[in-house]
Length: 333
Image (tube, rainbow, N blue to C red; front, side):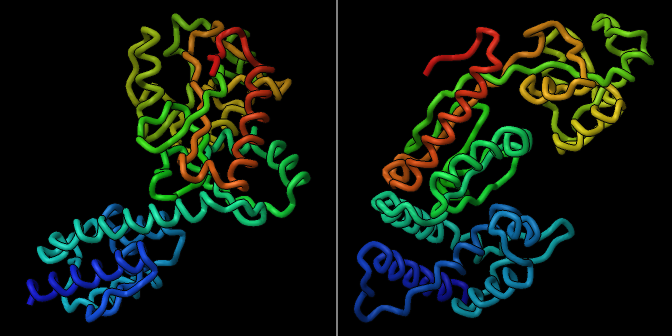
């Protein structure tokens, strides 16, 4: 039964691949699969759970469950089994993943080529950026863009993760590391200077200034499950563990607001911290290594007039921001 289901899906995917590539249906072959069903299947495979896949696809869990059930009915086999932490592929499901990946690649290539050839400005562009960049740097840039091009709509995916542009999670990404995936173009926008900031009231409570040699005597605000700050402190010669941070949260906006409330010292961009007169930078300049900033898009998509306009607007706006706050360490493109 499982072998029959596997062969059936292979035929369905082959026919769908041909349909995607040529806009035709292979003669005497089974009907093509709905790509949305295969896309849902792969999202669950990658996320390991329905809830994780719904976040990636921006859909509801009931909708995703129905799509998986419909795919299973189409091929006549169960693809997943429930376990304590989510879902696990059945043996039959495991054998179908490679064929589904082939279909995914064909759909991505087709989508990018179609959009890349578009010279229409009207439409949507999806941007991904970190929480701090999206909140404190993009609004004024997007305001100017929308005034100049009201026909362009913007979707903003706010995430501190590295979203996959090749899978069209976004059209354009603002990243803090140079991408190494083939098929992507990247423009260096400079570097983002960082520092530790504290409210004047907190500084008054601890004697008016911070002596970094006695770092453990202060309240620090850091991440909960991410170890970037732990590694950062160690790189500065200060060995710390998770409990070094009195307040821990992975949401950078929340961390900054904890810092604004006077709960302790938080690490943030000087672009942000300098906007608040009640906040003081407490670490020596360049003690915290700056973050590089890259603007990235898929090479095919960069040919789209709409994406090109948004890409150029982001590059111009962000370069101006980083140049204004440069202390002499901005990389040249």
